[in-house]
Image 1 (cartoon, rainbow, N blue to C red):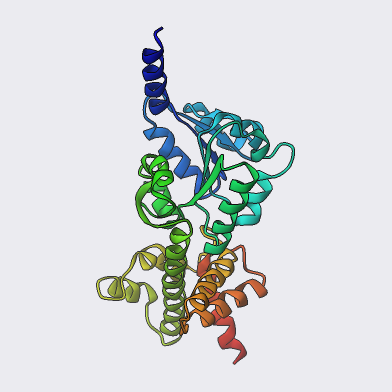
Image 2 (spheres, rainbow, N blue to C red; image 1 turned 60 degrees about the vertical axis):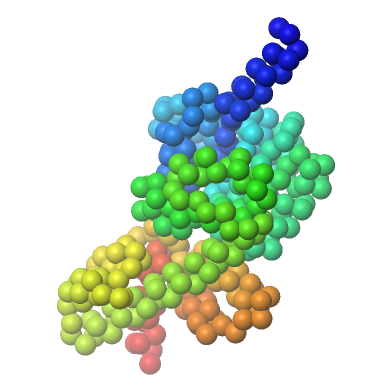
Length: 313
């Protein structure tokens, strides 16, 4: 094959054939991976690495490939999505003889969809870039919408990174929801921190209102049905109201994770010289939930925490 044709043909294939890796296939990661798999362009491949292949058998049966270790995944992937709890879990996947960095053999983009602190994701980009002579880079793309949004493929996705790196991830992020590029690496996590403040305030306000209404003798379901039609209505209310009504605290999003989220918000508020009115009190509420031993229950458990506080008064 003539050189110029080979060059054209190779470039054409590289453009069409991308291997996407995914690590962290839990409540949020699994449906995101499923949407990516279902929407993959022809020729692209999705490769998964998880605790066990058994719990993602449906994805493997649907056409995803399996990597036994993160190292193996790195040798195959062009970009890797992470949906794990925090930066320590990301680093545990990167490090070691079977870690992802041990398998790097070319340019690799890490897309951090986890909710972490902006500074942590910026530092991670600096560290992996330095350790791999610039072969591995990091962008952030945290999501909002909860399990419901993940299952529906309608997440709000907040993206931070340089234009060229973000462009590589955007086609796949669009398969899971509505991504918006907000600025350099870390910008997505700043947006998510602000998002979490608003969501936490909404959760706590709904929980407190449910307790007050019940103690005042109101029908809590009628109250929430009424509020949904007014200014108080929100997606949080739509999602959590049935839980508050039934006092159902089975986990969808664990309360314990909101400690790091609210701390990330408060750190960013301090770094921007912003006085917080609600952030500290919301952190106190979720810390109280965790201290009571309910951290692995759903965030709706704040309702029980408020009830318990009332009994102690």
